[in-house]
Image (cartoon, rainbow, N blue to C red):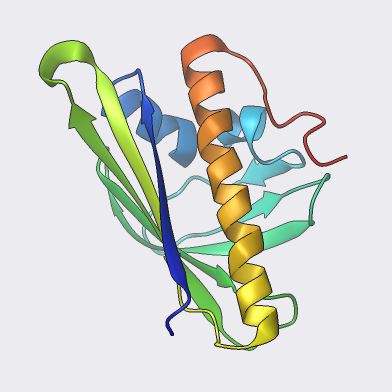
Length: 150
């Protein structure tokens, strides 16, 4: 069994605006990284995502970026693990000129262990919530993450 998943959401804004809400650390810090994000998502960069509510600060390695289309990241799969998992985000225009974006987030690479399974479930929950928070922030300026986990 391969531990991987894919979550998605439709955001009622054009791909460039949605992409920038993830790539720009100031924007990401408004709705997702409760402790702030340091560093723009650019190929070869290592950025820091800090979560004051759950579970702390993480270095995130940026593997690939296609502006307005795709972001590929790697980060530690489990606390103190000796391997990384891969996160792939895609941003696809939908509905022609209506300015909507389909955002998909896929994550894979956990070890097939009890702790790997638990880590994949926790991250699936986190990415699902991130998509809801992204939608609320980009479309309405509402921060859904505040108070979500604490």
